[in-house]
Image (tube, rainbow, N blue to C red):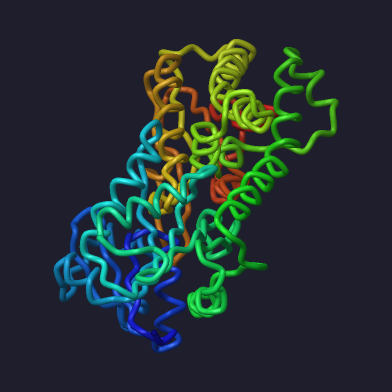
Length: 385
């Protein structure tokens, strides 16, 4: 198989679209498959010029020449698996189900890159599913690689393959897709490295989060010079954490760490809602006379759906406090590619909730200053106000 053979991107996600862009720039024939509509289209330089992201294609309901899903899978010997997974409790089940379905159509000689996060031992399980669904032998008939990506990037968290004899081949293909990686390992070692990176990333975040939660008085909390993390930061790898929670053995210390991280993230909303109530009481904001605007710029097309799920959950919980809650993105205008935001005229008090570091830029677009009618609270570990 040639490393410039045609490529299928299975999944109209942000990460999948970024891979497509890299491949097309190298004049590699690339097809992207919309996993929701079950149709595929060849990605051309013109499409990339007209549509800067996967989300723009989805929002504008772009019409291209299409081909059936079955043909796209069977005719492209290289597949990058990059679907949008929006299940939470059934995340692993959804990944396995999608791979099982597409595997019925893969051909002998296929090279399959799984770019979705999985837990310990779950890649070997996926290889067995491909074998059963396709009737192919993993030792001789196809190559499976594990290449989970950091959210909204083509940077790999780890890189594993079930047969290291194919190491150079899969590395060349990953480089063609502009995927950044350090080295390639067997599947088990790549999963362990994934677990290690998650632990190293979240341990300091959760340590600071939990210590701040214990300090009930806001004035005391803000005297600590802690680095603040937003709910946006906390939810970057929730799917990864859930996968390890479901795959590690009971009694494994790593499971205790993953479970602790998961519980801390889950409890953040309750912590923030308590702070929101305290803030409203301190500023004499009555629920019936307050409008809330949630500021959280979410990429709805990334592989992981964790932010979108948390976004809806937070809205539901805020709604129990203040019934008038809005998404700030509904109050924006775009000029020369730049978005600016505004708050509608109202006789009610208006409260902004910032959910990410990126969304701090929204404040700069307002012509009004914080004052008698406009308030601000940050959905971060300190709950700045």
